Image (cartoon, rainbow, N blue to C red):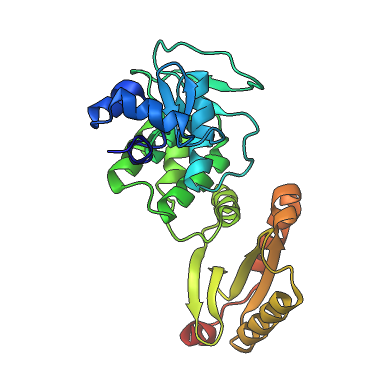
Length: 281
């Protein structure tokens, strides 16, 4: 097996002995390095890319973990980390390297390279994320099928009691982390919402409470004129069915939550859900 192929197979970064276990000879490693197919991270450690986060973690002495591993896996994080989170094992050695701002984690085990599994990274992230940010990451990982039912049970068991109670209310259908943050905060206020409800002639709605619809417009979406037009068409179609649509964007939810919460409670309190409307639903 080629050294580059073996490295890719085991996560992009590995020790010489791990490559040897896959049948890659030391001569093959040296030849691949001379040809520029792989890079040398430090003595006895090689990688497919000199610039990857996993390579920087290996340069520091361990593997990606916590929020850094979650970002690398595509999990939604409320505030993406500026520093790399590295697991160096129980007694791992830390190596100096250029521009190092790494946050060190000590996992109870041997030092490993590469990236922690999503489940392990989430358990480690319990140390670094707020409860609502963790809830959003948990739902994102679930939606992307990065954690199994067994993983989720282990994560919930490791979480503080208050957070564990919220995680038991998590769902895998949030379209964005912003939706997860919105629902988490309303759960804390005792407001439960239906999520991803399909309305005939309208499509899928982010949230519903009686005959009030809540739509969450993230940073990337709904900015263009065509998207805005589509939103207005959907809102009009929902209105014809008797629904009131309320929209919130990223800035409102993240930076003006008190205003958002007050609006949600006001519109729910003022809405009148008649038996006739319920029959139409």
